[in-house]
Amino acid sequence: MEYFIELFFSGLTRGSIYALIALGYTMVYGIIGLINFAHGEIYMIGAFTAYVIATVLGIYGFPVLAIIVLAGLAAAIWSSAYGYTIEKVAYKPIRHAPRLSPLISAIGMSIFLQNYVLLAQTSDFLAFPELIPDFEFMEPIAHIVGTTDMVIIVSTIVIMLLLTLFIKKSRTGKAMRATAQDRTMAKLIGINVDQVISVTFIIGSALAALGGLLIASHIGQINFYIGFIAGIKAFTAAVLGGIGSIPGAVLGGFILGLTESFATGYVSSDYEDVFAFSLLVLILIFKPSGLLGKAEVQKV
Amino acid sequence: MLKLQDVHSFYGNIEALKGINLEINEGEIISLIGANGAGKSTTLMSISNIVSPRQGSVIYQGEIINTKPPEDIVKMGLCQVPEGRHIFPHLTVRENLDMGAFLRDDKDGIRKDLDYVYSLFPILKERSGQSGGTLSGGEQQMLAISRALMSRPKLLLLDEPSMGLAPIIIAQIFDIIKQINEEQNTTIFLVEQNANQALQIADRAYVIENGKITMSDNADALMSNPDVQKAYLGI
Image 1 (cartoon, rainbow over the protein chains, first blue to last red):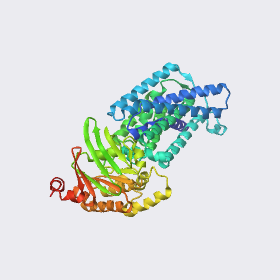
Image 2: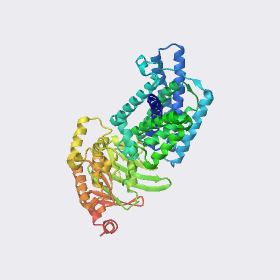
Image 3: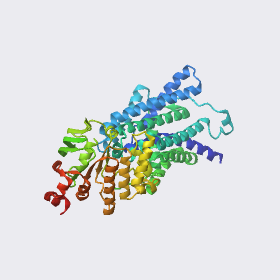
Image 4: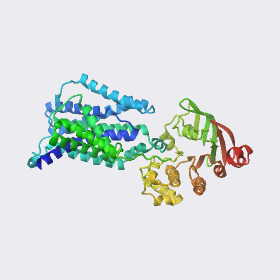
């Protein structure tokens, strides 16, 4: 039983990271109908930024909490700048082209960014400092779930709640929902659609960057390629939960994380991807729009 | 109030508007009638600058607006109800109405306008918590008009409000368009295939064919014009 709970929490941790990245995929898809394949790279850049900041601040002996906050902020801002720029450079000029063009552009961006980081940084794995200290009150359950795991799970849930609230209640959130549902009409009621799209990329990128920081301090190493794998998994999570749906992305992330964790624990780590993708296929057979996805409503 | 001077608009390489000239004065109901594909909707989209004219100018209250982004045009009090209504399907009726007031922040004024549209279309108040996509065609049209009114337009552009609706609903909607014009002093530019209904409430009207204005006159005069009767009124 204890083993089960252990696997459960490790699955939730993994799932949280998938969820954080999947949110960016799903929001961008919801607004402009594009699978932003460069999104995984944004997450990787977030991890690298956090690495640089955390290392530098560590050298100067900053307190741990300050390092976490500053590294998180820097990663979020830096990644957002990348996300914003990618949209302006690679997607906006071809927004009215056939759907395949921005998709190819996204894949190109992804490859470009990987190689850019490879050249600018290194191809080696870098050891990421363990930022999150062990809390004392976690002591009794530390053998089941580590402090870092707990921090990751809790912060993902908090972020998701805040994001949902933001999209439901705030003016920008409402503009995002309207733009997602009918872009022409959004323009006709005075929404600046370009701005909404930029905000979407910025928020998605910031979330991915936080994911990058959290997972890097959990696993303890990063390299230029981590974004690719994580990106594919998070994309799977977004599709599983219903692409375009925010709770769906989180649910999809958790389900995928748990499936992988149990597959690793009870079968073999060689098979984790087999189980994860089999589950995706199964769900798409029975519910093509994903678990919480809305079937297309088209009414004239 | 609004003037189109030699407006040419394109979809790709296809010239949909080949030099449109028309003028709308404050307080009027002006109708634009024409067949499918004549360029009616393109005219409205060019005014709202969703389709940017390649040549010519759209002048609203003395200002050239075809270089401004759509949101600035809405801010100036020029609002469009597009063809096919474009209700936000997953927002509730109330949220759809709130979105209409997106650019406003005068809470009291918004509240008052909300009461006003509810008084025009009481059914919307009953359905306020329902999502927009579940409404019937007529209710969606009412919601689309109401949403536009929430921006408190000075000039309201209506694209085929009668499309796909039962005659009794059409009559009701046209009555209310007339009522909005009278009560709120909203100038109305009405694009219609249903020429009969449109000419009945309009002061003046333009006829568009193949991207060009071919006739313009008082609505009564057009109604008794034999060419118009034959081509558009089915007499």
